[in-house]
Amino acid sequence: MKKWQQQIAPWLTKYFSLPSDVMMELPRITIIGELHVYIENHQGLAVYSDKELRLKTNKGYVQITGSSFVLKMMLPEEILLEGTIKEVKFIPE
Image (cartoon, rainbow, N blue to C red; front, side, top):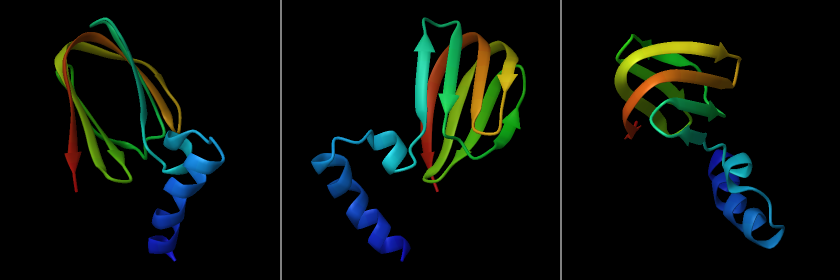
């Protein structure tokens, strides 16, 4: 069933003009300068320190590195990180 969903999601996205991040359960990342990162559609916090944030996604992890990190907001599927952002990296499972 999961394989069928993975095959039909791109088709639905293309022909019905649906947002790909929603249909394919991808994270949506909004970066404002090097100061803020807002991430939607994550599956939980894996690592957090003042220099690293790693979030679980359905395809692996999103890792953000930098310094002086502060979690300004954390909801079940959304997170707002403030600090000096140096790198955003996707780590596949």
